[in-house]
Picture 1 (cartoon, rainbow, N blue to C red):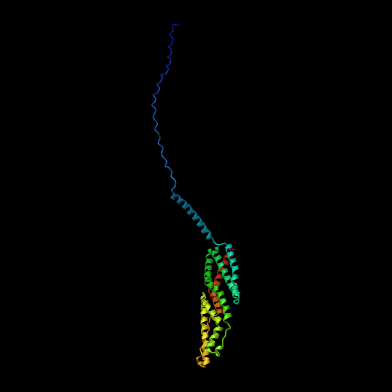
Picture 2 (cartoon, helix red, strand yellow):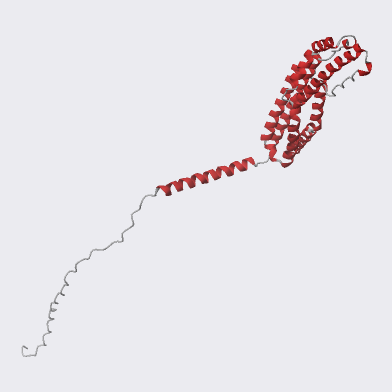
Length: 294
């Protein structure tokens, strides 16, 4: 059995041949990376800083101005009209008291006049600053009244002075009469007239220097009149004593302006100014505006 042929032996696998390790490349030298440089920030210049501050302040002021303008241009409220009506109602009684004041008490009348003017000036000041003036119709009515008041005011201020002149003239010039020129000599008449009319002529000379043109003209007219009147008396006495009656002079004519007409003329100018009429028109407009808001 040993002579039987044996199957050939299977060839043994050959171990894989060892692979040669790859040759490693020589290490490359690392180059430094250049990073981009950022620009260095510099501080703001003083000019730029002040420009920013100025711009901010200017912008803030602009906002404030806009707010103020909006507030000022807001239409008047019902309370604004009610307040104006209340002011006018309180003041009107003071001004109307002028017509009930007696001119025979100059000091009391002067106090009443000055109080009335002060009260009206205060009213005008409050009205002019009131929001009701933002209404066109109200403003137009007020402007017409105020223009008339500015014309009337100097005459109103003169009233107290005219009353004082009226009172002084009544005391020193009224009821002064002289009849001695019929029977006395010229030199005696000259002396007596100077004595009798002395206080009156001195008053008129003082009035002629007044800062009030109406009073100054009044004083000058009457001062000239009394000078002419004295001359008349003396010349009349001279003609009478000489028996030359044809030489008797003509008596001078008294001036038309008196202490009382100073008062009435001023009162007429106040009326002619239209102050009361325009004031009533203005008051009506304000009351109508108030009624419309109720």
